Image (cartoon, rainbow, N blue to C red; front, side, top):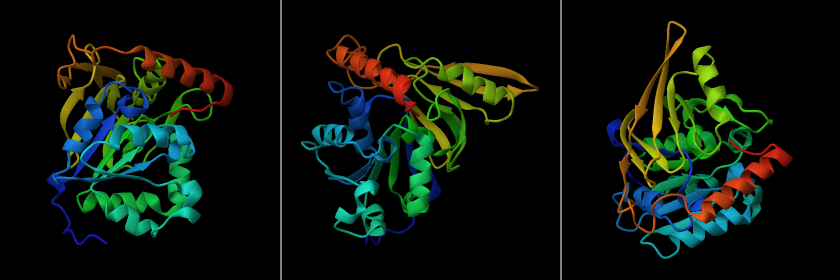
Length: 274
């Protein structure tokens, strides 16, 4: 087990992505390279948790394809196949420099994490200085609340509460989520927070937002709070990563569009998502 000392709170990091990364942007590595750069390790150990998707091979293979040739040590942890694990769960989690959580069902993710005690281990890892990152359900889970489509129609759901406020994702790609989130904030069911477009990531240092970045031109974010029953909205413009403007990584490529169509179709059939 790592003997790292507990990090000062201002050194702890969480990177929440509205969508994108290796799961949605197969030709655009900007968000994933940003994640790797958050660790001070020369060759960071990065653990992928595909729990929200049911540990599907598609997500695991996409993760491997993205990180296999980078300066890191990639590993994935399947809670559905723990009998095949080579190390105890605690050791696997607490020896990582970065933990990256995939998208899918936030409701199922939290239930399965709790059943294995992984929710407590992840917070302990964060306290020790491990970078926590995630997209979609893997981003919303760190907040006090979010919006899930796990039961069909979008609705509010409680998160781990590591970060104050609420988060909703896919604000541009799945627009049905935003009204449900806004209603939750207005009615006091959800705390005020952020809505992130696909390709946008919000970095927290300690428990304070420190940087807003994007892998795509035109993508943005909203900060929304309820004051005396009225919503107050602020449009946030992220910093564009790399050379995304006008280059081969700019915009939303056809593969992303196809992935989005497939995901929306699956949600219509199975009720998956967020």
